[in-house]
Length: 56
Image (cartoon, rainbow, N blue to C red; front, side, top):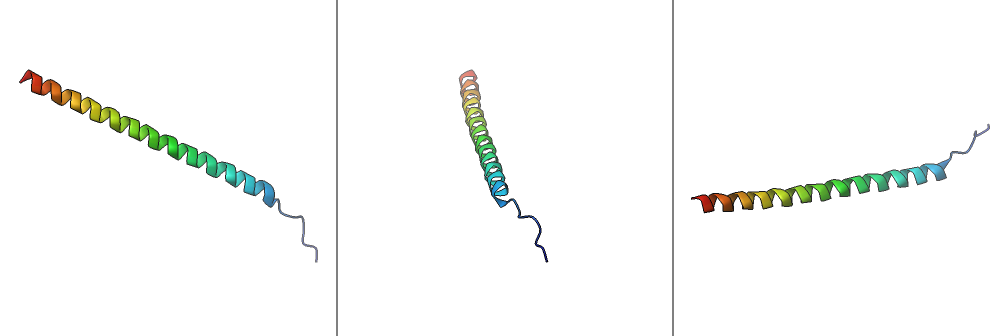
């Protein structure tokens, strides 16, 4: 019996590699954004606390 056409595993592997790279980059960007937001929030909380203590 004939096996049929060969599967295109090379392009599949490259595509998967690119998709994994894209996912990793998006995840890294998300982590960086979260860290920046966290730093900003702590900075604003410190500023708020110092203003409250100055007012009292």
